[in-house]
Length: 228
Image 1 (tube, one colour):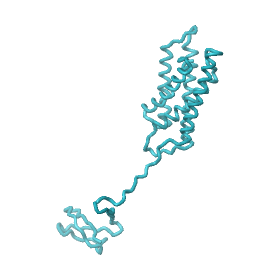
Image 2 (cartoon, rainbow, N blue to C red):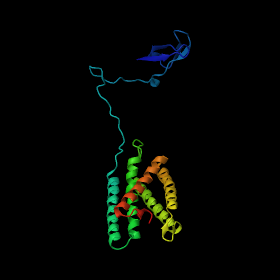
Image 3 (cartoon, helix red, strand yellow):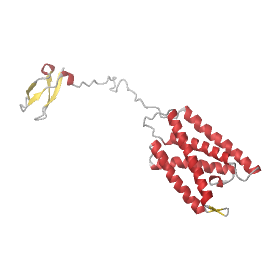
Image 4 (cartoon, rainbow, N blue to C red):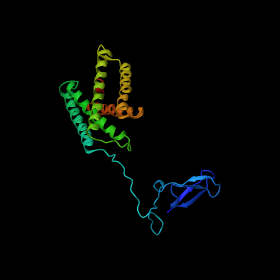
């Protein structure tokens, strides 16, 4: 087997017999002493077998880690979404027949289910498609916890609005809007930290929860459901 050698002096490329492997000798062109590589240091590149037309006989497929949503993720996201819808319909019946406001427990449970479903679905959509993440039980629990944190932030915002921004039964709307924007921006840092999202992705993740609340409040027939 011939060994390819490049002279460090004149950079001329030539071949020597493998019997000179590991030895030193002068370059035939410039006489610079060259150390011939040992046989174990020689890299051998085997050419891929080709067909008569000249194309590779076999193309090795590139393995790609699965990035599709797991069954457990989809079941949890869809299940909590349906559960939130059911509770919203219960709240609508209550609005029509019993009380002008849905019960606190119904609002809290519906918000919690909305938070979980929007967080899990948002994570499925926004996460990197080639980051090699493993979507296991821990990932689902973390996504659910982030959604529940959104619900807590929403109810905290409502509590502050009721205590500070309601005077004589009237809501100070500009203050409520500013408070909602502030809570939205602050909440954006949660998915940025937990999921390592960029700011825009974190904002979209939070916006999915806000959109869910808006849709469900429209189902209730009372858009103020978000702030009451």
